[in-house]
Length: 348
Image (cartoon, rainbow, N blue to C red; front, top):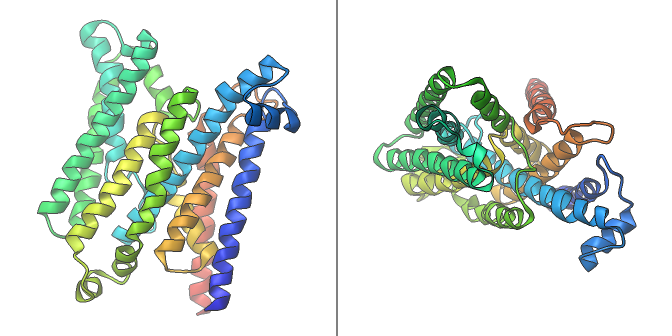
């Protein structure tokens, strides 16, 4: 027992160190190299001798670092909640169609309004950005409310999962129709949004985003006890006194809220919510969800910081789409975890 707690503490400490190192690298490295001492001066005094460095750090790299951390924590924890609830290792934050609902909201603003009104909100500067975020939140909130209603009225976790997947397909189908009838330029803007980015938010919005993603991700430890019981199976959990319907409602609400916020501000980010929970389970080697949630949050933030760093490495003229990097890191992790588990099962 002591050995197990020691291992978990070591993994948490390692994840914190990794997080600090990667956050520092995100501030120092980029197309313009800024020495570490300059970064420290700007961060701790709010300014520096070089105005260019100051602008780059405070207006670009620091907001991007905060958004990366918040998105990684939220998606890592949301993915863990979904995998435990549905007992499916391939379940992720988007499995209930919330990301698709968010995409449908954005498609309505970018594609539908262009056809009907003759202009797109994306051509309206800051108001356009606000319209995109608002429509994305509205789409995600609509699907989340529908899923919560279904979860409350219909018994059976599998039924909720299937209905969620179907809602996702319906949303994707409507988006395809809108894309088919839309001008090439609008479709291009929509595709760019769908590639995901951590650099869309101004410093004040990035701070707000950090609060509304990191706080719920850490608050999800409150769900650790029902998650531990659900992991044993619905029948055992019921016999041990868990109200399955109520627990499922809160788990979906937490995961859905975090997914909706990240998708609205950053676009649909793939693989983080699927790969990170596997990484947390593999390194922690525990079934206690209190520690798994903490590890998923820390490792999720570290993974997105690494992806953000790779997306804007020195020597790369343009910032790469974040989803192209997350797929390169996330897919091998999932394959490696499945391969390792299969090997361990054979040895047992």
